[in-house]
Image (cartoon, rainbow, N blue to C red; front, side):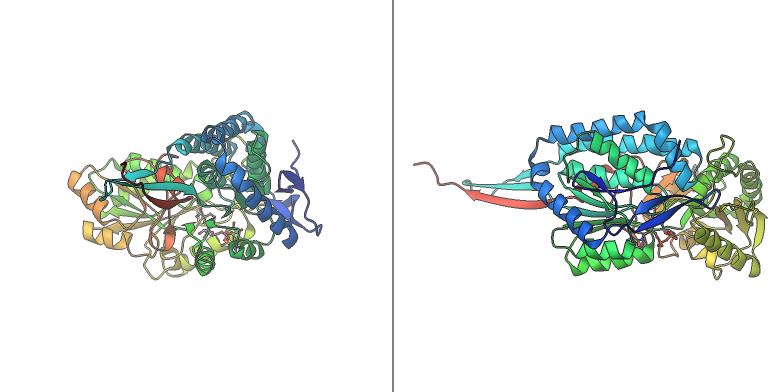
Length: 481
Ligand code: NAD
């Protein structure tokens, strides 16, 4: 297979950037340039918005069964193309092939969920005070959407936004990450091949800040959705606010994992180590701060390090690899900087803590302990393969640490105590909490954060709600003579 250059999709046509500018795409496993992605000029952004605007009336008015059918067909095509798209995803993103194929399966699952949910965008009738009045609440698609998706899950993050928006009857201009353009383009092509009308979904790439400032400010765009870092999310949410546009923001996290002495320590450690190093830790819900009840800390540490040492790091294209490289040299340096800061300030490296190999962006699965709250790693999202072990002696102490940071995305806990579970449910400041297993990120369950981790949900019935507006109609008819 050869890695393709990626073009833009504007009003149903695949086109190069009109200014002939391109950006390089780099293989993170070898640091070599493998292809190029077109840069959209401003006139092409205008064309993409015009196409989404023109297509909106047709798409919102066709039968909901037709919208469902297109999404379902796209899911079918994605599954059929799993080998080919999986290879593209691994090549440009670095994750092991089995993770790439799992992401494609998840994306198909997401599109199917929204295909079904499209049929349930119910309004309601409110009983009126006056017997001659009928009060109706209507749900309507909000309009053309500007969506921005990241490089860590180039398919599934895009599928969440596309699925919800298109199911609701919205159209979209999508700007995925320039680091991983071909796999998102393959998802978009599957939707196009599934019979999506021209203009319903447009795909642009380029200079992120130029595109987002143009799209968000444009009067034809009615809704903004972004997945990425907290600083960029705050900028885009501010811009959306300036133009009075609702925004869904799915941002970073620094997920706490509370491990109580009454749980099965060894199996919790093994499960969480595998979860930590999935996609080399470049996951917004990645478990990061492992708060472990002091008497079982040594048992947990030993089991966690043992599992970490079994993680085979290598090119995602090798079947033996459990973990691939980081996306870029910039991310590699960022992770290295956080670990160096911790080590220089007295942290113990229980495992890893170094780059691997002479090419590519490989970093070892890393376990740190003896950390303190002044270290950067305890405050900044590592977005890499680093686990931090912190002992606690009481529920209150664990809760204080879990809720200390401005983030509030995912959280995890292991305990057999019903009263501890009740306390966690009540006191955890997070959009998601999973207890005694990995239960997050299903298409049918809410997915989103609180505090600096953003607002809005990208899963469950809440996800489609974000693309709908509410119209209230009150109608009085004259009493019959
Ligand atoms: P970054 O902030 O430079 O970029 C993150 C993403 O935002 C990229 O896809 C980029 O193309 C996009 N982006 C950047 N500036 C933008 C702008 N002005 N307008 C529109 N899009 C813009 O960071 P990075 O080094 O690429 O990634 C690291 C950080 O990003 C991590 O710390 C993590 O918090 C965050 N991130 C989060 C997720 C997530 O799933 N929530 C995914 C990827 C990255």
